[in-house]
Length: 145
Image (cartoon, rainbow, N blue to C red; front, side):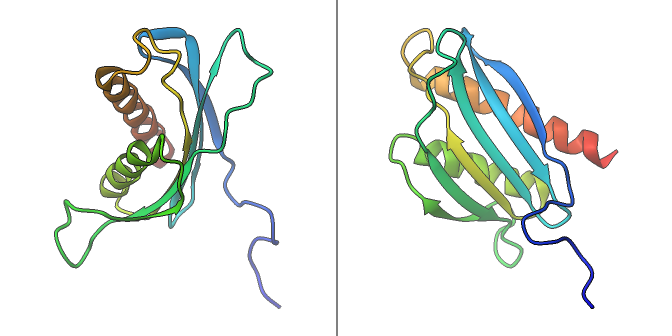
C-alpha cells in the first residue's frame, strides 16, 4: 500500500491574490501560488476591470532551478511552452524566484502590459516585475512562518 496524495489532488492549497498593475490601476494582476515542499508553482495573468469576460491568451511556461554546482547566483531554466511576447519576463521571474526560494520553480505567465499607462514600456514592465516579485516572496515568507 502506498501513502501520499491521490492523482489529481494537491496536498497544498494554492494561494490566490490580485493586485493592481503599476501605472494601470484599472488592470489587475491575478496570481496563483502553490508552495510545495520541493517546488513553487506560480501562475500570473492580467485582467482589466471593464473586460472581465475576456480570457487571456496562454502565455509562456518556464521551469527554473537554483544552480547548486556552479554559480549559485545563476539559476538554470528551460522554457516548457513559449509565447514570444512574454518569454523573457517569465524566464527572468522564474530564475529570480528559484534563487530566492532555493528550490525549483514553475512559472506560467500570460501578463499583458497593453493596458498600462504608456502601452507597456520597459519601465512599466520592470515595475510590474518588481511588484510580482514583492508579492510572491512575501507570500512564500508568510507561509514559512
